[in-house]
Length: 155
Image 1 (cartoon, rainbow, N blue to C red):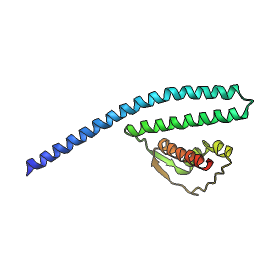
Image 2 (image 1 turned 60 degrees about the vertical axis):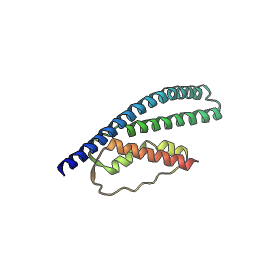
Image 3 (image 1 turned 90 degrees about the vertical axis):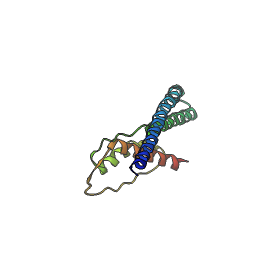
Image 4 (image 1 turned 45 degrees about the vertical axis):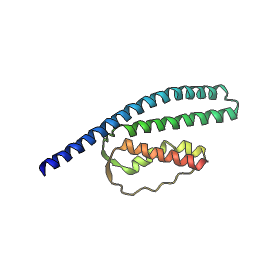
């Protein structure tokens, strides 16, 4: 009975090791793919920025260049998310005021919302508690939600 239990433990440990090896391989693959995608994206964004500056007097070209820049930024966010998904997450939690976190993260997208005539309404807790969270990670999640919402409202 004890030997059967030991064999089961060994099998489980082998499965875990195999799973970890596959995750490590996935992480390396994701890093390589990210590098191969980001280099051309940087070139595309550079050219789009150049054209936007060069053809300032043509509104349609300005609009197209802006779209190109926004899409490159979106693809860069997707690549970043791929990398974050493929590697283990390290959380750095600290007591954080949720009201402040939301307020600060909204400031980052106010201009994009205003440009698309999207209003932002907020209602905060009058006496917010501090919560132990990784404020950088939560800010990124909020920013992704806001940007996705703006994109969805736009079209």
